[in-house]
Image (cartoon, rainbow, N blue to C red):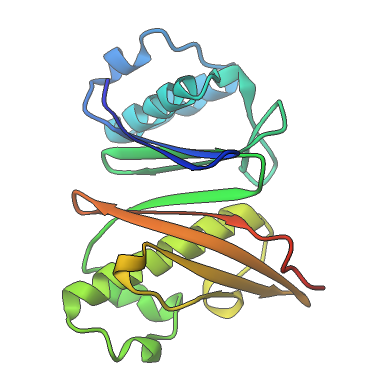
Length: 215
């Protein structure tokens, strides 16, 4: 069973990453889905999405949870019935979850040059003029996108814009971490972010810092 990586972020926060290599049938063994999730997976046309969906249930099992412990709110945000926070991500053949007592978000993205075409929709490109080359720019933009996507999942409020409201502090690749700020509807929120790169993919995860929040 390809549990790819486990990261203990702090005593209250843990990340689980899965590399999806098994067929759907194998991933389905030993997993009991709720009716809602049965309908979701049965409605998926993409085989990799179906396999990814089931692999996430294996990640939950690694953390001691079953599908019946999970529910989704009206905005589609996942929650655990015991009150612990969860965030889920899937990109091609990798899936991941993060669990915490704090608000958390996680995103995995495959690094692709197509991000260059959409970058100006989520970040001011003028801020990247010192980046050494195109490969480095793709890496940096993918991290920024992943950070903003993770924050968007945490914030979970309609109208929050990647470009207008979320700012990610510049970082060096070797740092493997950064911070971010949301300024939305007169409220400032702050976030701690970490990132890692593997096999052509980028994973970014973070949690809110309520001590810095200001209304």
